[in-house]
Length: 290
Image (tube, rainbow, N blue to C red; front, side):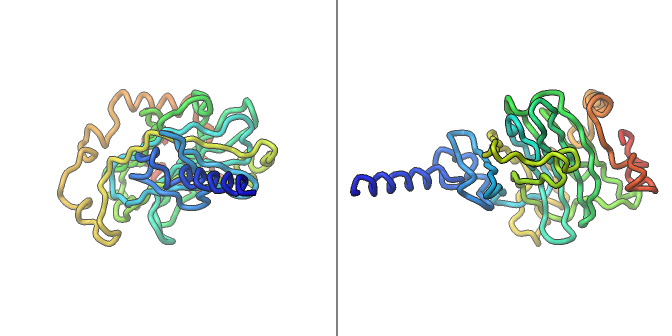
């Protein structure tokens, strides 16, 4: 019995060491992020952090600070095999009902079928601005980089530095733009089989659990704010690298990349959904690529 108690004690110590936010080996993760819920489903394994979903719980992590403008990037290897019903999200968001939010949502699918990447944008609590595309690679076999570049001029979603969506600042056209709320950076995995795969027709097969999303190379190059009520440090006259026109506006090459993505991989765009939007949303009338 003494030996068994010692074994249990040692196992508890191991769990504490590897649980997300407690690991000394995941210093890069710990410096920028912390577990936000279900700590026992968020583990560090060296340079890699993993979020796990089973029929008990999903998991998530959040940045330790909030930011106003800049670039956030993360490398993700999505759930392998039959991932139907699952959603893995990487996003930025402010707080409150009138929040701003930029979303990557990776919608799982049956084995062998392509992952769908959904992006969405909320401004002052108003969302329903979804675009969906199939990736041009298998996101479950290797790590790929997903980034959000946010400046006063635009929001750019990128996959391996290829732009897949651009939301320009069109305030001069009377269209609200996210620029006055600090955002945290988040990721999570959860069960959404009521809508995630083929509109909810394909349910999660829990015999394949746990579903695991893996992360590494956590990068936040953004303006960190001291308090959510003091934005002067980031929203004043000081110029940052992301304010430069050569950065905050797409180059000719990036424009070509975006056109290629939309022509070959876009499968849904809210701008062309006349059922949901009988009147074309105003921003869609002004975005060249929409």
